[in-house]
Amino acid sequence: MDNRTLCRYTEPFMYTSAFEAFMTSQSHAFTPTGGSLGSKNGLGVSVFGSYNLIPELAAVVRMIIMTRTPTARRMQKAISAIYVIAGLSWKV
View 1 (tube, rainbow, N blue to C red):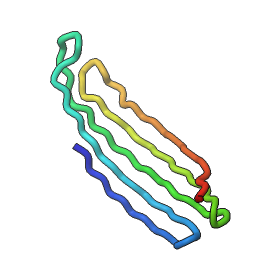
View 2 (cartoon, helix red, strand yellow):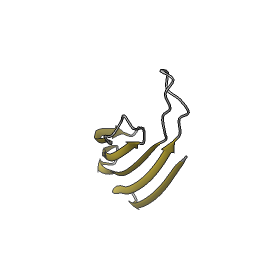
View 3 (tube, rainbow, N blue to C red):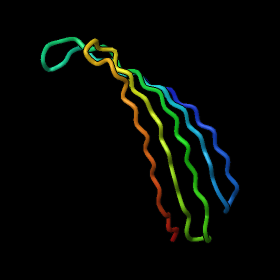
């Protein structure tokens, strides 16, 4: 199950910026070793945007911060990650 919220602002032919918040839940019944494993819950935010350098070329960037919390007894640590993606978009 996923829940997402998106907020976006666009200035035509200039830039676009957006913010996304999401929450996810994934349930498991068993592990390959036969033990039981509870559900995993995740929470995250993403900020992304693009800026037109010239009409044919835009710089794009996205940053994602997320945390996934397993509920199994042997997995006591939450798993966190930060991803940054950047690039150029050439429009033909």
